[in-house]
Length: 499
Ligand code: ADP
Image (cartoon, rainbow, N blue to C red; front, side, top):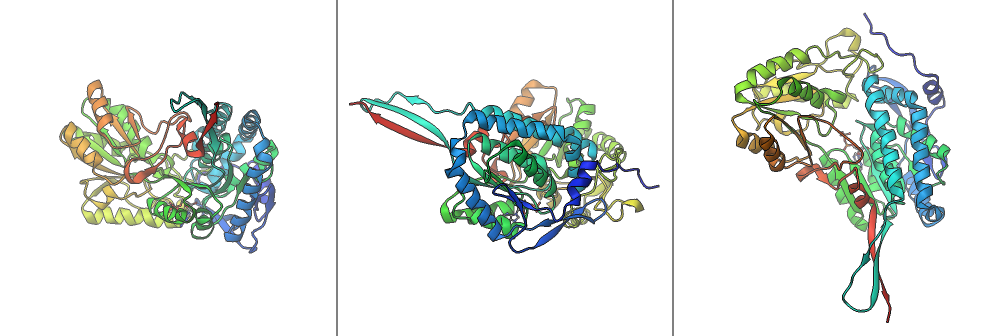
């Protein structure tokens, strides 16, 4: 029997009724110069939700010009307090329209509505408020120079025009991570949402204008990576590019940025170890493991996809895990009962099912899942079964390559040294989890793991005040907290000769 789904909120219906959705450039919602549009699809059904105007080089150029004009003009006169108020206002407006945003996100991305409601939307609001607070607290220093009779001080200044390229896994939240910090620091922004999920960013654009931002300060241009994304990252008048996505794209961004040596920050993929010791709380670790892998259909850069379990409890743990995973309710995101929705796209479905085949060929055993979802009601969408692979060793492709789906590879380890060695045996270094009740062990492992975040007896915990970013090939730069201010400001030393 087909699952009951939510009736769309009237504001969602209204938003979708004006089509194609236009991009935000210089305070106006405009069509692409080429007149081109693309379809954004509902991953639960593969049907078109709405057409969206497709930004290309010319549109990106207009957006950059608008951002530059704003940066050199009106935006300079806007005080830190006013920037704070503008960001606060955006947060208030999102909160006021929370259900609309949650539904739009679920429709476009596929994630369960209860996750959009409980995580994506409130975390976005919190993020805007957190960085609103910083707008009035960014300051330089006076310096006790010994070189002579000087008054020497520093100014923390914005970088200028910032290009921001975001992925499809947390479309609204990633827009907030990028925009809020950049604006708090006084920059102007051209944001390119992912082509799979442009809708919440465009709705956010409407609220940004409603909040009273001067024209050109924030521009939002959906389009494809190889065209709009490449145009933004190679644009000679963009001072900085901030990117979240795959490491292969990260490399292209670095190359594209070389023309004018623009600053670059990259938050890339991961293959995070989640390490379960015998002395840990097994129930907690089981829950944490499920949350770490299956949240957002596993489409999370810090997902704990390499599950290391101490040999003594390996069989018991993975059997209990598989019993729980089999109970995860897979279904359309717009059904309140669904705990896991579809993957975002057909491309993503092919990638994940490709890895399921690779895992089986490598000799891993899917102790649950391992295929596309079998329910005939789900056949039109991009649904896969939550999968636990046993018999995995850390050299296999399913243990080394980012699958970006609901698939965990369970690997046994002997002792603490082995856990740390195997945990670090990866080109990535975004995050890690550790489950133990031994305090010394917890600190020792947290220190030894080469990862930007280590969660002990928890996983996927986030707060706007904590830095997030990668070691090794998971990227560089830290978003979140005071650390993101480093990404969006530059320091000037001023010397005043007092003689
Ligand atoms: P995924 O493969 O998971 O979609 P990507 O790294 O390709 O991850 O996508 C993340 C973001 O990067 C998206 O907004 C996408 O359009 C953009 N992108 C993809 N290729 C490029 C590129 N060559 N230059 C700039 N941006 C790109």
